[in-house]
Structure formats: structure tokens, C-alpha cells
Image (cartoon, rainbow, N blue to C red):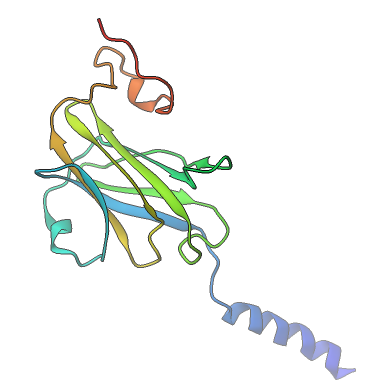
Length: 156
């Protein structure tokens, strides 16, 4: 009769020792630079110490080239340029997924890249170049948060 009493505590202990399958967060920083780009870097990359750009809209899509693509909730970079996007796909950060990342602001040229979803312990470095994002209507304050896969607005 002691076996059933021991089985439950042993099972709970085994579950506690398994690696956590918690939610994965795609995190990174947006900075200004000479060329717009999106890169996966180590968290100790020296470029992450550069001053950040706040107010940049960052959108990511899982498996962007497939019919089953999934848009993730967009993020807006904070004053220091940092951002976080929750990824609730099974195995995100461990299994291989392809993502597209788009960063936009009306005063910067957009940055776009399709790349592997960074593994745990890696971050995105998004570099923005000054210029105009021609797909954003500066007279529509909600435009940056609309579906970016829609056709660009016609500017007169």
C-alpha cells in the first residue's frame, strides 16, 4: 500500500525537474544605423549598448511563407529601444521556426527580414535608417497599427 502513496510524490518531483516549457519571448532592441537590418545577436553584443529608438512598431509572423502563417501580437519599442513579443507556439525557442520581422516608423525606412526564430539566449537587433516609410500615412495616427499586409495607402 505504500507504493501508491510514493508514486504521486515521485511523479510530481519528476515533473518539477523537467525543463520548463514556458512561454517564449522574442526580445530585442531597435537602434539607428547606416543601413536598415534585422539580425540575431548574443545578449552581450556591444551594439545593444547603443542608444535605442522608442516608438518603433515591431511585427513578427511565424512561418511567413506558408499558408498556415501566424501573425504575433505587435510591439512598440520603449524609450530605450527594447521590445518583447510573446510567442506561444509549441517549442518556440527550442524547435526551428521561420519568422518574418518588420519594423516601421514614419520617420525611418522600414526594416524587414525573414530569418530563423532565435533560440533561447539570443535577441534581435533591429537597425533603422532615417528616411520616410512611404507605406505609412503621416495624417492617419492609427495607420502604424493597422494590418501591414494590406495594400499601402494611396498618397496624393
